[in-house]
Length: 378
Image 1 (spheres, one colour):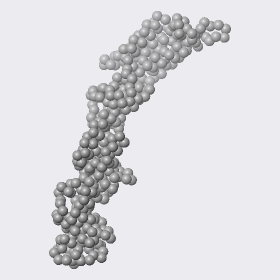
Image 2 (image 1 turned 45 degrees about the vertical axis):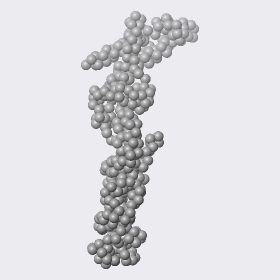
Image 3 (image 1 turned 180 degrees about the vertical axis):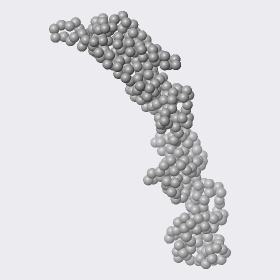
Image 4 (image 1 turned 120 degrees about the vertical axis):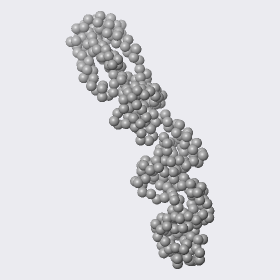
């Protein structure tokens, strides 16, 4: 209510000023050393006083617009649109020659001084991109953003995409009346075009944390956001990284992966170029290395058949069962021994630092050739 009373007072003064300032032109122009040069005494062929006064009226119109900006500082664009007819009316009055001669000089001068005093008392800061400002959340909107009073001529705006690196909305982290720091993301000569950001404050800290985790070679959980021709866009904390298809441990359905959490390790962390590359293959291989060792016998699923052998999935890690390791007897074709999707007992023969695993069923044959003649006993 106090804000509305103050707004009403400013609106009344602004309206009176717009009307009264018109009459001051003749008097002030004649008395002001600078402005008098704009409106010399009329001689033959000279401009009329009313025409000569127009540059001064334009100056007053500009000051009136500045005054209105102060009046509407806490209004959202929707509220300001409701007041637009009033502002248009004021502008029309400022340009009206007939009104100029009807207001007493003393009244106009008093209102003009009041106008200047109010502007001085309501000085607003100038924002630069990257500035850290303290703001108060005024309202949340249906687009996931928020209007914030950061002390400017009008409300600044926090869009949804500047809330976080993920898909969070302003309502997830803010509420009306909340005070906190924001980063100025974009500025403009139009006060209402000041864009704020929360995301930009969290990014440097997020990169520092990512570098530390990469140095420790830890495995983290990432959320798949989308995919393109080369791989998945993946969310790692407050950052977004890239998971190439070549760094997946298994073949997957790309669309079904959207929204899923997957274990990943860091392949490349480059804060300067904003490049973060992840690997699911390394994460799965690391987990496999902790749980299994050379000589262990495990059950896997055949995922692909090649002329040189079969690929067997061992719970996220694909191992190669080379054709020479299928049986003690000669194997002419892998397709004659097994099928894709078949469950298969294998022995882990070796593994390297890149996660490649070599397998064998030959070592499990009770008798040479059992994989060909009686695979159930293997």
